[in-house]
Length: 407
Ligand SMILES: Cc1ncc(COP(=O)(O)O)c(C=O)c1O
Image (tube, rainbow, N blue to C red):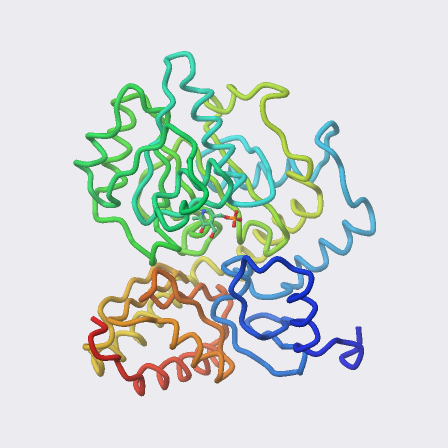
């Protein structure tokens, strides 16, 4: 569509108000085009994007290899149901397995679905021994479907939708003793994000994931890592767990998996995966050739462009940038938590005004858990856009007034 054919942001918003359910808090901006770490709205305004696609566009908007692969696949064959074989799904499963722990893949379309699959697999695996309990962690986030929501130990997301699915037990994130008390012979699995995303970019204490691995092994429970947000190279390793030297039995990945083409996957150790027999679980669109080609092109982009290394470079740059601001304003910045291109900056006050002020200055960022600024920038964020975006955040944070009584 030529720019002149586009509706204005105001026209689009009016259409939404009339026809789209209002279950999202949206900024009054209609986005129309993206390239790398830049995105434009219907009025032609250009934004630097430090939160591209809510973590989906890990290699930037419209990465050329992914665009080419998807376009070619769409011209050739759009959909292949899972009653047939297709080359791309097998190749993508192998690529993920080779880069993780040698597991087998079940493909779906989102993070919540991948976690549903993991929960069902853990229960099916534990069924002969009557194991069904799933242990999860406070501040975790696993999705909005009932199983994934029940696994999400944040009461605010449950409110009004109770009762939750039974059989979930929540323990404090980072507290190994609490985990030890909860993990027992009735436990089918422990589901945890190796680095919590929505919970505020929380990095596990030393030895915590190793401790969970040991507890699971002793109890005979599966250790399941939700890598929906931290996986696929974001932390500078292919998967977040690889930063901590612990292997899971099961992992789930989505978001960046196929660069923004809807895709999710559950990977499981072959002996565990063997429990799922034909008919026990399924997804119509899961592992479709468009998503798998996009996923393969994402991996190719990360490897060909050396982007795992780039994650570490950006980690250091973001950390020192925010440390500089913290030195200036220690009363505003409480904590800085960075792993690769997962950046969390905890303030002593509400972070929403920072997001709004950055938007005013053409920079897209996010806030989570009230006080945490969250950035999930692309691995290939160029130096000039890093500088441009950071100078906007820096300006906003140095001028920001802390409301009285905030801390
Ligand atoms: C760690 C984690 N798990 C699961 C989900 C749910 O993914 P989806 O929205 O694709 O269902 C999210 C989404 O933010 C997430 O961050």
